[in-house]
Image 1 (tube, rainbow, N blue to C red):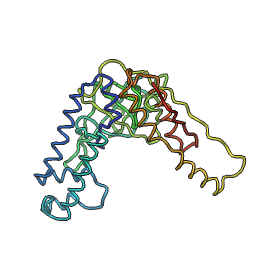
Image 2 (tube, helix red, strand yellow):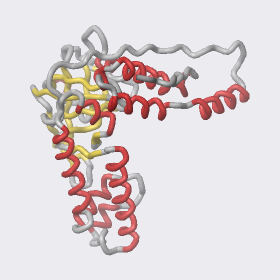
Image 3 (cartoon, rainbow, N blue to C red):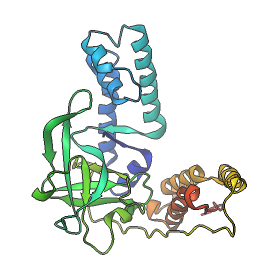
Image 4 (cartoon, rainbow, N blue to C red):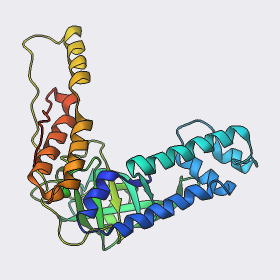
Length: 301
């Protein structure tokens, strides 16, 4: 699956000394692809194909000669997607990374125990113009540095570097990111306290995007145990919890507060305030699972 940069990730990489010119270059290339979709049917088809949530057979329509620039119905779809993509770029800094430079992939464990701590295995499929995998056309990342994260990412330690290696006994695994079973702490837990129960990870091997230096220390994430009721759960308990969640959910406020402090605090993401807010965000993220929420106090300088 295609991977995208977003505002929190750009913020982390920029404060890890990745130049702003790198993001501007990717932004310019992404914008150019959008603009070309206004001029050429092939580029319009490629843009629409990225969003395959509908049941419309875009590829068959394109092959049959339907024009995304002249056919009224397809033209309206294209117009909506253009506005949607430009709004994502403007408001969320959601920038598409070329599929030859990064991917989204499910994480799995190395059951062969051949990967060492700090190593990963990744074999990805080549894609056709519609974004579908080409059978038996894969590339293995071998002996190169890669960068991995799990969205959402707020702390500097949520984005980590690994060494991609080739393990022949893992070649049957395609389009999945294989993490080592060795080490003092699971690498997945280092990134936002995630695990391997179906989480997706973003992996980048574009050298310009990979930050210099060593990995920042990962945060420690505490699993909070939900309160137990002294009676069987009934409908009233479910309704009460649902109403409490609607009234008290503050994850967006915590994220915006964290972004503000990372921008304006002299120490940026290395400040105590940003660390505290990242922990609060982690707690708020699991509010719907365990009923435990964080309180957003008024932070002052």
